[in-house]
Amino acid sequence: MPIGTCFHPRTSALCESMAWRDWAGYFAVSSYEVHHEREYNAIRNAAALIDVSPLFKYRVSGKDATRLVDRIVTRDVPKMKVGQVSYTHWCDGQGKVVDDGTVSRLAEDVYRWTAADPSLRWIHMNSHGLDVKVEDISDRLGAVALQGPTSRAILESCVEGADIAKLKYFRVVSARIAGVPVEISRTGYTGDLGYEIWVEVERALEMWDALMEAGRPYDITPTGMLALDVARIEAGLILLDVDYVGARKAVIPSQKYSPFEIGLGKLVNLEKSPFIGQQALRREALAGPVRQLVGLDVDWDELEKLHDEAGLPPQLPVTASRVSVPVFRGGSQVGKATSSTWSPTLKKMIALATLESKSTAPGTKLDIEFTVNHERKRVGVTVAKLPFFDPPRKRA
Image (cartoon, rainbow, N blue to C red; front, top):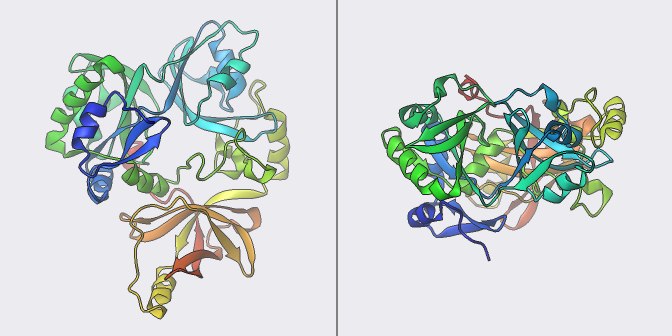
């Protein structure tokens, strides 16, 4: 049975919908209100406060900490500066992605590592012969994501000991909020201006209350997973177990994905020191991936026509879909769409899809399976470059 995070006393009191889900053994709010519309609008137009404490969190320290992290992930870790955060992934020996997450260099020989799946055993397995300490700090460290256009103003009004205005994209700094020691990283999962704040669980509620108080003039809104799902699809951000299967969970070879196949190829440094999967990835880089991650724009006119033929008004999906559906080119299936949603900001239906490489050129016309009145139909889609939504404020 799930348990509450360190913020549960606050989130449970605010969750009017009583809509919860299990995230890594913790209760996570799906939507605080009956519908997630206001929470989504907070992400794009104000500030959303999201409890992301269920992330798995590890602390890697010691003389060989850099060597260990560099041995596992595909980024060039020795080039990371203290205070820098890298979004990265790690592969098995065949170059297939095990998981993805962030690595923050907190000191010369100290890193904080986040993951979607338990990764402690994988890190320990690869630390053999190294002078390093690996700790699971998942239950010691709470985390919230403060995301949206007013997030910077909120932090500037309540943070002590750091200049938030000068905190660059994918950087982390130590600070205090209402006297509570925290670490603030300019990161997030919404594709918007935003921050993630890390705090010891014993003082988590103090920090939550201070953020809510400081954020009231800026329309801060506690936000759940349903709104976050829409935002991350708009931002072209993948989700483990939805848009790809981790190599350790895959049952058959086709369920395993290389970084080049799920949009993470730009995060692979093939010339750095040896890392797990490097040789396999070098071979794939030369040959080219057989499939790739793309965006799809759904033809609304065709969708409307199918509903009209069934005698129904066009119906927007209430929530983002995580159900995989086939994508066709002519009479042949060329891939699958794994996440789809109506984008309130872009005013269109969009999807993330993994397609055979010869069908991934932007502008390519394809068809996607769509169910109307319990009947499987096909709707036209157009291949689009990712991300769908990438506002300048995210990096400014």
